[in-house]
Image 1: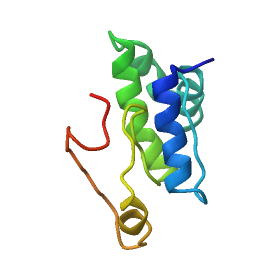
Image 2: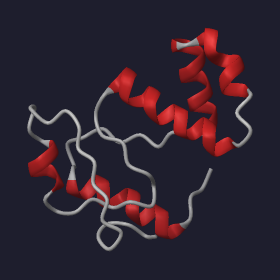
Image 3: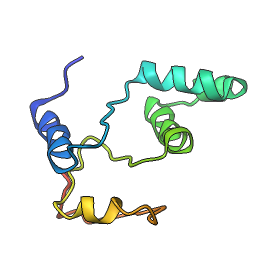
Image 4: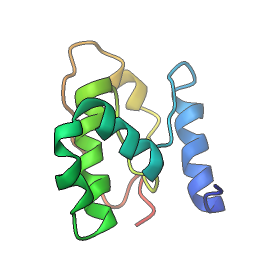
Length: 105
């Protein structure tokens, strides 16, 4: 599966800013397996969401529950200072909304 060039550039930026971190690009198929592995009893709920984006939204919560780490949409780029903020072990939740920095929107 190929992602658009502009989004690929955003993904590459994460690897540049955080070169020692593991990077995962989750697909719909991977999301489904994650749900089946961790919450098989909720698969009917997952399958009955009326829009695919609703399944993706639910999967975000499961990524963080199962793996921890950092989640960012593909259209969001990190700022250079992100490693100094999220590199600290004391950070448990960081929410940032700045439509003029780091986002393609």
